[in-house]
Length: 198
Image 1 (cartoon, rainbow, N blue to C red):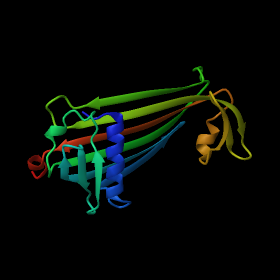
Image 2 (cartoon, helix red, strand yellow):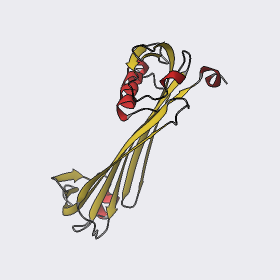
Image 3 (cartoon, one colour):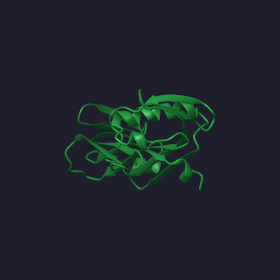
């Protein structure tokens, strides 16, 4: 079981050893529809455990480019004893943003945040996930056809944004609302060396 702090620490370590081109896989997706725009990016990195110090709970990871980093698996890592040299540690990071126009919206202008965590059960290989989703609802208070800018008044601030797509801009009117949802998640899993080679 990993805590949010343990997952973030391990992910930072994996990012350091992976380097800018060390990510094994990475995908970016974008999409639009009438009144909707979305983008998402996923990065997956795998490293091999090369050393474990049970006394200090230090775990040394070797990335796909050969770089090594040592991270401390804090007390929140409940299944520490399950890890062995040669095991694979995989980290997957996902980030997404969706913006949706709500015609004549009646929702409360607000910012909400949800956090989610999950972990392996006792006796299983260490694994965990953390995620955060932030949703902001804002009112459209001005539309400027000359500059193709829309002014949004949210719960804490007012911003003006340029809408580059003329077809999308034409859909927006004063009194509409915009709902933006930002999602960020990280998952870590340890795979035994024997299973990783199959």
